[in-house]
Length: 383
Image 1: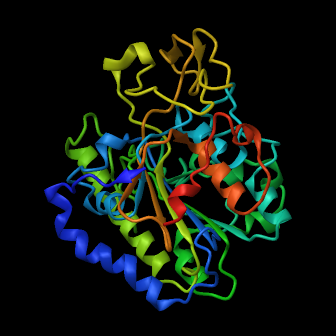
Image 2: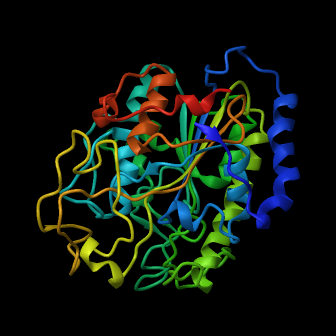
């Protein structure tokens, strides 16, 4: 762990506001524990499809960059693999499905998961999905093709909502009720029963994913086409929208009554960039590096030679055994924790799960139990 590198000039103007964010909530709420390691609440904000180098320091993401510089950044944090869906699933199960890696219509898992662990320990949870039409919605996308045929308007997608992919959540009306529209977050955090664990997935315009080509009434963030190159007009717009969403989410959390004790916010992307034809030898991904029991790393077996995935689309093959998700942004805002620090320990989404499990004594699931290859991030939660 080391002290922070100098800030890019483009974000220095934000530092006074960020410093106030750092200090004000601490003064506003008295800590319930003198132990900085005792974590009160955990928040996860999961963004999409961008590498560390294309977000941190980018002029289109000044707020996110300022958070990385003000708080703590894990500079060697990787996605577990590609494409999107398995990264979300690994973060709450510790397991990887290599047979149906991005099938939004059919993927469901009868696996032990973080929800089970939290409820056994008496911890409450809530998943807040941007543009979810109502609590407990179980459709694969929204708006659906009936409203905007044939496609190109899906703001919510269940591949970015790992909770609804779990069989024991999908079959429980009580659990489904905890998967809510993002608009419910502020009210819940200021109410008498704020969840202990909160997951936030922005919609596909606000998370840097893109691919929404229709104008959806009531959603000024639409349309949001895919970017075709780093910081082209569409990629730049996606980053600007994500930066604004993250600022709104962080300010909502840190100004709420729920921001007490050593509460923690993790801000991540699921995986690195989709590179296109220039990276055909890596199945079109710009970065397939990894660590910590990604396929072919640590104790995890490699993917089979010529493995095909991602809706069985043409050209989706992997030609070697290692298949990580690439180097991605990872920012940790701990209310009583580290400031201005970097940590170059290798981490991935298994590490995120292991950290949650460790601080709340939940036990360990799947690869998160592999302490020899998967480290927890607890050093970033303390001074």
